[in-house]
Image (cartoon, rainbow, N blue to C red; front, top):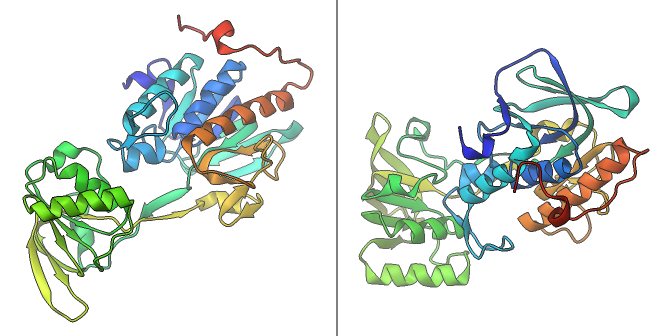
Amino acid sequence: MPEALRDSQVQTTETKTTATTDVVIIGAGPVGLFAVFELGMLKIRCHVIDALDSLGGQCAALYPEKPIYDIPGYPRIQASELVERLGEQAAPFAPVYHLGQRVERIESGPEGRWLLETEGGLRLDAKAVVIAAGGGAFGPNRPPLEGIRDYEGKSVFYMVRRREDFRGKRVVIAGGGDSALDWTLSLAEMAAQIHVVHRRPKFRGAPDSVARLQELASAGDVVRLVVPYQLHGLEGRDGQLEAVVVRKMSGEERRLEADVLLPFFGLSMNLGPIASWGLELERGQIAVDPETCMTSAEGIYAIGDVNSYPGKLKLILCGFSEAAMAAHAIYARIRPDETLHWEYSTTKGVPGVA
């Protein structure tokens, strides 16, 4: 069991029983995990639901080995390490994780409570709900190549989980944005060869990344630019690529010998079932009160990238702040007769942490 889950409970099986708790957090990404800590410091119990089968949300699923540079106190930290540390920080409060479950329905219950049910039949009864679902349900924008599904998960991948898996491989990276550039620069240290395929000579990534890409391409040792070309076909057998065929608009074709194709054409994201819960939305995001992060439904809060309000910044650190604000708003709501005596963590301490 990962260190982050040592003191927590993990439930992934289907159940028809109804569990009762103070708060249900939908989403086990960085912001959802920090919400466990903030609520725990206020002695509020949490259950956490995530459609993925592991903690970390998009950080863990899409770029676990990618460095993050804007977390206070960490000049550089890998996404997977950030998730692990947030899990450790939440662990003393013994959250119950329901992984591999997606919330399908939510309805109001008696005395202002909320009843939730997942696609697997899990039922939860809570005093408040925190939606920390990031960008919502997400999946790759798949290139329209015949037979591509036969290669997916074997030699066609839409994300990099372990850089080491590509050591010594002939890699084709398709795309012209930050993901394509970042992984080209990262994998250039270990891949045997990388062909970068883009439909035009100009890349739209960060200027510094573009400059570094051009330097590597000029050296000609590992990285080679294939522009202006587009993906046209795949060659291989039993799910293993042998070559990627690319074509210019003029019809000119090239055959790139390859072991792996990494198409980075962005993600298709939507709120999924959340969009049908009757919450006020703004351009595909959940509108909230910026002071409390409460949605248009009393007792339901939204934090992180899933919410919207004037001046909103889509940064993890802003999501952390929203988690704290929502936690204190929830305390006032579910314990209206109790006065919160404010204490900093340096004086209050954390249960089980010296």
